[in-house]
Image (cartoon, rainbow, N blue to C red; front, side, top):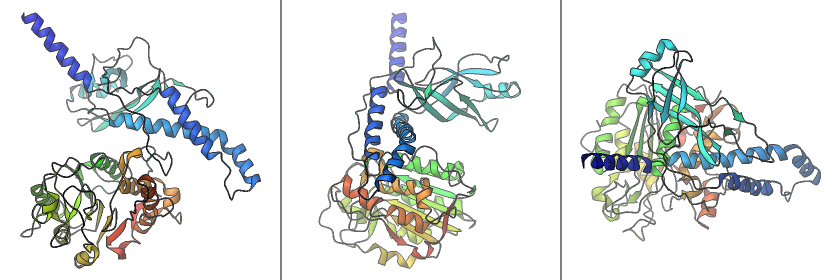
Length: 483
């Protein structure tokens, strides 16, 4: 009986472990070329104001390049969708060190094993480091499934990363294949999988197949002592959930580290906050000495605050409130955290600069328990907290709804804020290598390509215009230095 019981426990444990690993049921080798060809067909249409000679030259000179680019871009969209569905990735060693080849065989849950190059001088310390972690992976398609092409494993003891790259890459042939394929070694163990079905997306993509998750721009920004607070309220007990809030926060963090030069140790991430959590971070009316103040009190730091979640109006006082996840929207005056209070306390914190990006609306539109609310006059009320160092960008005007971008799995405003950073060829209007707040705001607010345009397409006529509610005098300031 003990043996049978042990076997059952082992099977159950394996099944639970396997259930965490997703499998894509897309026919990738059919789906991606098909979507690539649709995008290519649209691109190949002659423009209304395009001279015939220009049109013919465009097709002749760019057709094959665009075919490759569209294929890779669509591949990346599906790849990032799959990567976001993965559980927390953990690296483990499978055997002893191969001193002749100077490699460890290791594996990451949900994928086949691979060989990680570690110099012999560092192998002993690497093997003993129990805090090794997976910092990044990249994937390719092989046999209609995803497999590892790159892995970065970080060792805190050695304070450095070690990398795995596939050595054999199947050549890209536009007419027959798509993307980059990673050749998989024969006789490797099959990765554990469970039947998690991802439906083929059927959402509008007004800005096309642009992908903000790959090829993040490199900059000269080195801001090791800067502080970031990232708050993502997604799972509400009374109000509607906020789709993509946590994913938005993760992507914001990635940009802060990889592009804007923040130290990961100085980025504080909070999910699904209650009111008391807001108080602990920003303080209350009695004291402003919360976590942010304690971390920033030397006065020589840049501060970046990001919020994704619900906002709500006070039904009686018409003030704006951040909505904690357990708050009744109709009782925001009692259970919400006031925007006024946050900005009042933020003004008391010494800093070189303070940037606040808010992907939330304060109109109460489309929130359970609130209807028929008039304008609350945010800008007029918070101008008194203008300390000459703080700029606040919000996703919509005070009487508007802030929408999502389902095809890109982001809040619409957050997506375009990050795209402004990513798409420097268009956002950096004068191409001086400096991205200002003004350039970011004009990019996200563009009526033909930005948030207003996309909101109208996604939700059939929805009006959403981002707003600078505080710090207009700082719009000319530099946010990112590319060169």
